[in-house]
Image (cartoon, rainbow, N blue to C red; front, side, top):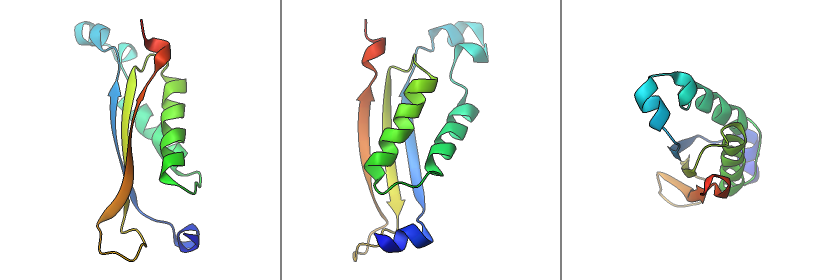
Length: 106
């Protein structure tokens, strides 16, 4: 809505990332795993860029994560807009998407 482009809105993002953690489980080496701080920074950077729809934001976040971490096998992302201006008494409204990285399939 036009009002949101002026005042913004609060959102929450939940991620579940499929990744081959087998090497990290035995090596205890961060280079063998996802760097969660880096994942956070990537998501925060994408969220700063204006978008019109939550679906677009989900696509941008997951696209960037697949780009930076090509070994990701899947991403479940849930984005909730808190207190959406839609004329209803609701805590939030959002999208939930499950994506599979076909490049990692055997």
